[in-house]
Image 1 (tube, rainbow over the protein chains, first blue to last red):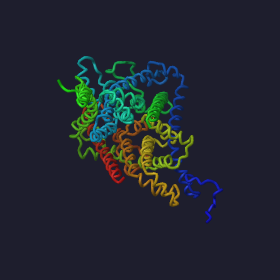
Image 2 (image 1 turned 90 degrees about the horizontal axis):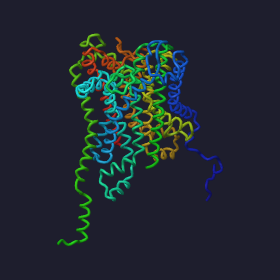
Image 3 (image 1 turned 90 degrees about the vertical axis):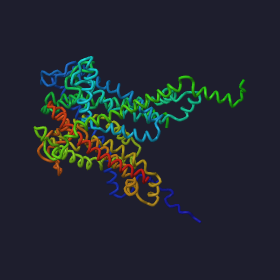
Image 4 (image 1 turned 120 degrees about the horizontal axis):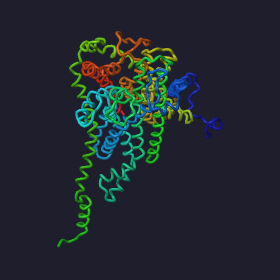
Length: 316
Length: 302
């Protein structure tokens, strides 16, 4: 009996290479174009932001150094305007810190509860509720901050100190609630990924459940938790409508959370509504602020991705 | 005097470990703290929804849906916002669904392991973290001015499509990955080309999951304000965007809500705006319900 050895010495067949039909090659090319579209998006963002920002820094009224270190932001005076971005950065940081002070404790405890204590049934109910919270449009949250949280703050803390109608605190608190799901979801993934053997080892040494949760599970899940917090940080910095509605439009270099401030995103929203003509200093300043915002969030995302990779590597 | 049997000693030891003085109480307190803080987020969601319902439900009337905007709070209607939002929804779906699924199929089924694939994948996860207002700047700079498309419906739709494309790609990839490998191997074994296997076997299996992800992404796009504000959506216009004249100026519900909330007049801020919010939330609720029904159906069939 002889076996058919035809092709045995021929080239190896690569199944993934697909057929030689012209139509199929065309479709594959089309799919590749779809995949490349996202790269074009990034290229578009980078080119448009940095070319307009470059135009901005070529103007006589501004310099890159003055932009990054100046403490006065008065962008609507044309050539007499002052373009020191620090007040906007400070406003963004103030709101972000408040948001994280709310979101990190709430998010981490939610994650610990969902991962270690909740019955499957409770989890099935709680997780979609958190998803809904993450899906509420931010303009709605802005309305809530302005018409519910601000009056609430003024009626309580307002007894002790003056609280402006627009203030960083109410925007920050509502933003914090918005990013609780971001913190909770990734932290819970990280805690669930902690091997059961670690928990059992701790129980064997006589630890109680509380000890296991905060001295074994949480430290073991640390890189995932850090990644979750960094991602939440990125969302808080980029969030626009809550601050545009509730935090005000006054570039203000302050630590006081009850004063009116302006964030980088809120400035962009304010300035585009002012119908600044293309090529004007104000128009270009929008893109300069946008470029700064993009760079900051990009760095944050890269850092988060690094931590996510680390926790995936450790336990899988 | 009690006899110390081994059973007795071990029982005592277990009891001592299980209930040292004060231990049970702090265990329970810890669990309570976790439960309460988990509950805070849920309570805030309920408060938010109740607050909006109480503020606005009396002001949602038939005429709010059918009339154009007005200077007078009692005559203000959301018609141009609703038609604009519906038009955006259809256009964004038409743009982002094929491109998103195409890209996901490429990455999951055909992409070779090389630098281009790795770059594109890293790029997508970074794009997902870019603030939405930056997409607005992209739309304004590239499409409004560079391609001279003006502040039109199609620019709004392109901007929102680019914004949700990473979300659709990630969801579609997960869905494709869940299709068993054996299905592909059986198809290839029967002599089908990889593309035929993808089109006739893999994609139909993955479709419910892909649709769910797409609808959820669409509902995110519909609720976005900042990007379309930056590309120049109008607060009010006395015309509809249906059927979709893509070069027309456009309005959208979130834009109208934003404008109403930032008005100083109490009637607009405290009565008309929450009515608009309720309309927007009902629209989103409908979309999410469809997504959940699709998800449940697909998880049952698998």
